[in-house]
Length: 351
Image (cartoon, rainbow, N blue to C red):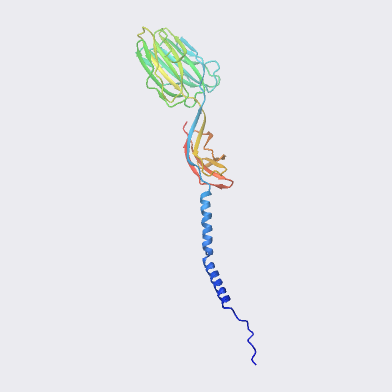
């Protein structure tokens, strides 16, 4: 008798379910991105983030020079009248480095040589062939001596004049501008063409007339001296001038006078105390930065590097520069050791 077949019967549905599951898994695997695609996507995200978050430099860097000058202070203004030679003493308390301006007026047109150390100012100085007003300047030395002005041996006569001393005037280039005008009649007028680039200047006005009537100081000025000899009269005055630009024209009227006159103008330049620079820029948009680094160099040599904080800062100043030197200023944003691109600008100082 035959034995029954004891092998388990396979259910057709189970095989079908397994096949479907395998196919589904294969489709899912095929749907996954490749390793290269996944890396590319990650790399793109990092690049975008770096581009967005990298340190940005400041923009629009500009620099302008700043010039600080000494105030000009009057030290004194003695005057004298005497037959040649005319001796003029410096103001009491004169120190080495003070700048002195002297006026010497006399009859005629002869030339009076400058004493040792003095320089004659070239400007209109004679009128009508009858009167001369010579102007001189000097930087005082220790123990400044009396200045003696002597007419040539071929001429004789009296002389009149004065010396004014100032502290705070440039010793290397004291005369910023000069001018003069001549004429006759009751009204004397200073030169209308005196102009200067100096700021914080002092303008000295020297007025001379033939005759013994002392002219009033020019309008708008403060008198320094007025004096006369037997044949000439002088009046000196001064005024502050903010500058730069044209010096105001001034007048003086001597009622009823018909004599020759000379009106002279000397502009004194203040001493330079400090040259600096003022820098400005538009702040970096990288608000998370620590601030900026500022580098100053000249002639290819770095002179200083410093921080400017916080990052919202848009201005700073640099001091103690040298005049007549070309500087380069470089500015960049930083956070810890991270830095941005550099912006730079030059400056040639010319105070």
